[in-house]
Amino acid sequence: MNSPIILWFRRDLRLSDQAAVAAAAAEGPVIPVYILDDETPKHRKMGGASRWWLHHSLKSLDQHLRDKGSRLILRQGNAATILADIAHKAGAQQIHALHHYEPWWLNAEKHLRESLADGVELILHDGNYLLPPGAVTTGGGDPYKIYTPFWKSVRERMPPAEPTPVPQKIDTPDQWPVSDSLDDWNLLPTKPDWATGFTKAWTPGEEGARANVDAFIDKATRYDEGRNLPSAELVSRLSPHLHFGEVSPAYVWHRVTGRGRQVETYLKEIVWRDYAQNVIWQFPQYGGESYREKFRDFPWRDMNDAKVAKDFEAWCHGKTGYPIVDAGMRELWATGWMHNRVRMIAASFLIKHLLIDWRKGEQWFWDTLVDADFASNSVNWQWVSGTGVDSNMFVRIMAPLTQSEKFNAGDYIRKWVPELSDVSDPYIHDPEEHGAKPASYRSKIIGHKDARARALDAYAVVK
Image: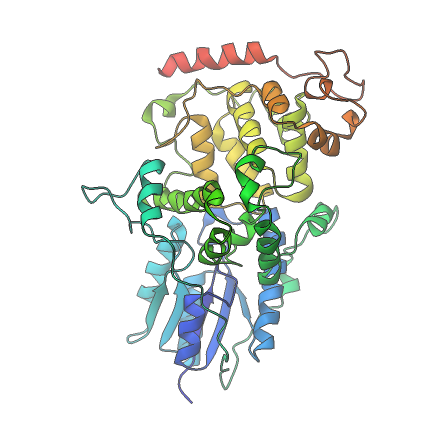
């Protein structure tokens, strides 16, 4: 039998439309491997919500492999070191994987190539994005920094190639490497079990991803409206499935475009995901440093101050006195996800109402989102804060009470803030102002006008 081929999974946990899977299966017997690597990303190891998702996604992937007569080998530690060791002991000549562009994975790929014995290849394929970073460039040949021309350039090169099916056969090696037990990784919470709501809200894995695509198709033509309406269930909820690679963006693109031109707004969101990868590919420090230099000296409030720390805690746990913000933060804690419009409102509130460094919010989302993606999370937070390469202006300060009413968030608030379940429209958006605030719901931690004035004063320092 031919020497085995190692198939390295990371954020690409699917068998269909997966170029590395297809290439490995075509070459000979395959050893599929996933490595839980908390060493390589250092301060960017996965947060708690992502680990919950990972557990269930790996379980699903292993079952799909077993349905093909194969299995998933699990290891924990430095990915490059472990893969080189497996390749040496198995006599493998090739390692197939999909490209990843987070700075730590680029470093791991470099380290792996240096660690492999002579004649052993690391072969990387495209497939996690519509196009690889740098595939579209400006007239001068430079990568795009601004989204709109990036979108137009990508759109001209669409549609992507048709998705490929699962290989009919995945041959197995004569001998399997030793594998960890998934349960021994302790990815799931114990006591208290904060993920009970996750189980009700999500079905991780390739089957769950495709079911979510099917569910979205029928309402995709209303996405342009629905992405702004928290009380309406008109968004795709595909972000965690795309992040973990349980479904390819090409598959989503082809399914959605079948609904006609009305889905263009959603297609722009898929391309935004590519855009975010292009940004971190160009600027690897984007997740920890403001792109615009003047903001690097911005006078954020000091987190060592007890009042500031208390304000941050109130934001984290949905106790700000602003119903739309509190609803979003409680939805996040309960389900690991938050509606798109509410994410912007909640992020803006932390940055501009509370004047707390955007990186504190980004870190909270990193730990609590099931779709916590380095590129998207970093780019979105810097967009809201006005610090990014292509971002909203800092002086555009969202008015959460107005936003709540404009986008009919009443039912959404009543669902996630039970203290306000008996408050009717239009008072639900600002019950304190209308004298309808129950005693059980806290007062605003800061007034909107005072917060706006403070934010503009702080901006004047760096302007």
